[in-house]
Amino acid sequence: MDNAICMEYVVPGDDFTRAGEASANMKQSLKRLGVPAAAVRRAAIALYEGEINLAIHAGGGRIRVEVTPDTIAMHLEDDGPGIADIPLAMSEGYTTAPAEVRSLGFGAGMGLPNMKKYTDTFEIQSTVGVGTTIDMSVSIA
Ligand SMILES: Nc1ncnc2c1ncn2[C@@H]1O[C@H](COP(=O)(O)OP(=O)(O)OP(=O)(O)O)[C@@H](O)[C@H]1O
Ligand SMILES: [Mg+2]
Image 1 (cartoon, protein in one colour):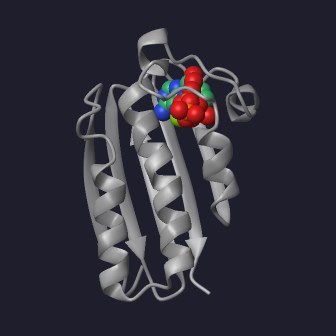
Image 2 (cartoon, rainbow, N blue to C red):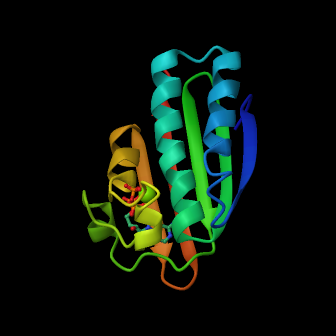
């Protein structure tokens, strides 16, 4: 894409001390670029949820953000276990997070529903045993 500013992040697996770094960095970068606050907030919420999912459910993954004057486009990919039933995973309250993860405050089953809610486009593709990719974007008003 012409004139896009790109940012790339590697999310480590199962390291909750670092989970949130990519979305926090993107948020700061978008603010510095002068992106309106409402769009920054929505993108940061959605990317935070995606980033946590990479850490908890996929053993880590990769994030690429492309910013144009019109759009914040976020691409997430992992080589994790994949998702067998995407509509079920997308439903509010569904979680496979183990007890020790839930005890840390994760596992409400609201991450994927909120990623869809806070973005303008949201696409998820997954193959069991191969991994998951998510493309989502927030329009800049
Ligand atoms: N990248 C992924 N790879 C494999 N499975 C995933 C991935 N992302 C989500 N899932 C599956 O989809 C379920 C629902 O995800 P969602 O983010 O909505 O909830 P959660 O992560 O369990 O809890 P919360 O996000 O509220 O802390 C997860 O419990 C997991 O089974
Ligand atoms: Mg989640």
